[in-house]
Amino acid sequence: MNYLPPFSLHRSEVTVHDSEVIWRHPRDLFRVHALSYQHPVFKSEETYTVKRVLVEKRASVIALPYDPLRDAVVLIEQVRPVKVFTDADSPCMFELCAGLVDPGESAEQALRRELDEECALSAGRTELISQYWVSPGWTSEQLSIYCVEVDTSTIQDVCGNVEECESIHVSVMPFSQLMQALDAGNIDNGGLLIGALWLSRHRDRLRKEWAKNT
Image (cartoon, rainbow, N blue to C red; front, side, top):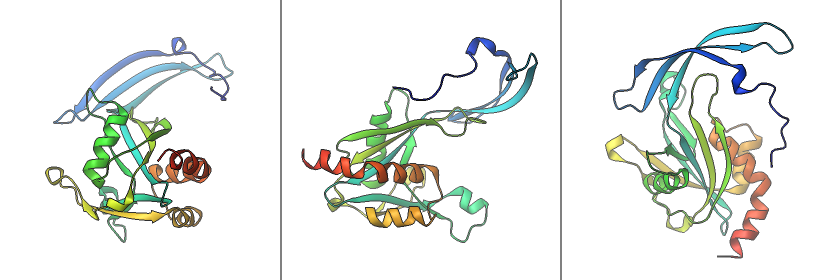
């Protein structure tokens, strides 16, 4: 059920003048388009013709690994280009397991694969948290985020795909500590922020539903 109001414009009210690929990734992971289109101005007879640059990118998935028996989540830590580029005090970032959805793969299949590659964990039950556009002003990437049942008793502290130069430190964080980090404003990336906020609202229900079927 959709509780949002209806949109103000229909697709037929937008005219696309041009869409040209101006750069392509060597392995075709993404493409850069020059896009020109015309759309109405709200509450006006005027129209705007705009030119934008759009990065066409495959869908991604994020897994919030949650252990309902131990009431804990699994975080990964790795060096991130944006932290290096901005000369941050530490090049590392705490975040959730994530990755691209491969061709012919569903989002849930991708999250199970990524969870195994990045955390050496097997995914149990899953629940979709949300699907959303990562940054609709410049990229077509759509992200699906799931809460995933895991058993943290089997955790390995170092993982990663050597072929992709991944060096990942895996850690288990109690739910109470995650909430402290959330309230203190310590979370600095969207996936972990959305996951923590969702878990703060659904954790009690999830523990009852998953624990009773364990």
